[in-house]
Amino acid sequence: MNKNVKTALIIGGIVIAILIIVPLVFGLISGGRYGGWGMMGGFGWMWLMPIFFILFWGLVIWAIVALVRGLSESRGYDSSKADSALEVLKKRYARGEINKEEYEEKKRDLA
Image 1 (cartoon, rainbow, N blue to C red):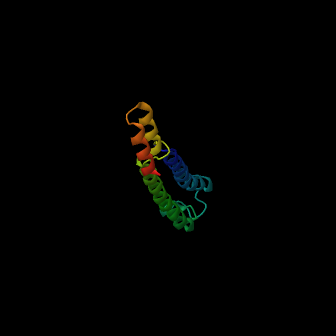
Image 2 (spheres, rainbow, N blue to C red):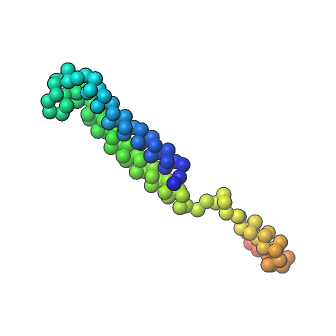
Image 3 (cartoon, rainbow, N blue to C red):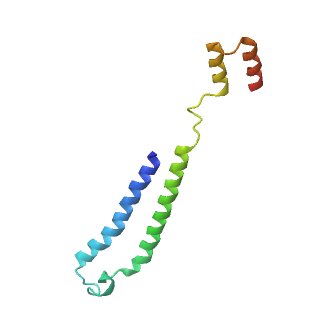
C-alpha cells in the first residue's frame, strides 16, 4: 500500500473517531441537562448535526479519492526506475550485442 494511502486512511480514521467520540462524551458529561434524554439523545446541540453530516461525507469522498489515486500511482509507469533508451543502447554495445555501426546509427535515431 502506498504511503499516501496509509496516511489518508489514518487521518480519516482519526477524524471519524473524533466525530463519533466527541458527541458521546459531551452527552455523557452534560448528563441530559440540555433537553433530557428524549428522542435523539438530548445532547442539546443538534444544530451541529448538519456540520457533522457534511464533514462525514466529505471525509468519505476524500478517502475514496485518495485510495483511488494511491492505487493508480502504484500501478503506473515509474520512469525514474526505467533506463532511458540511450542507456539501454550503451549497455547493449558494451555487452557486444551490437556493433559500432549499429550503435552509431541507433544513437543518431534517438537524438
